[in-house]
Image 1 (cartoon, rainbow, N blue to C red):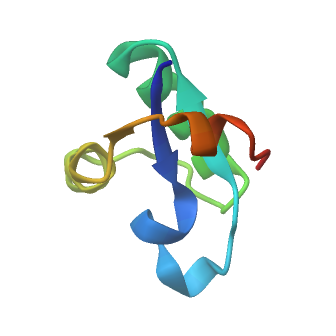
Image 2: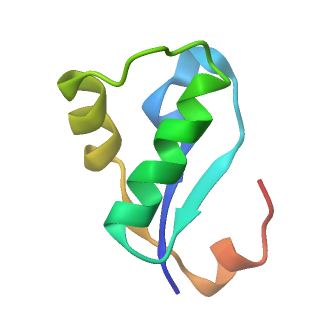
Length: 68
């Protein structure tokens, strides 16, 4: 199992239910940056990176059964 971020934990106002996944933190961060574009982000600031990293968690078998 890898690592995940619930988009709605990073940006609750978005209402986005997407779950970003990656096998490593580096892969997860790249995937999160790509997803941020769908929310209109044109620049990933150090503050956004810190907020994303604060919401990373290990994927559980229950998470793995969900798509997002």
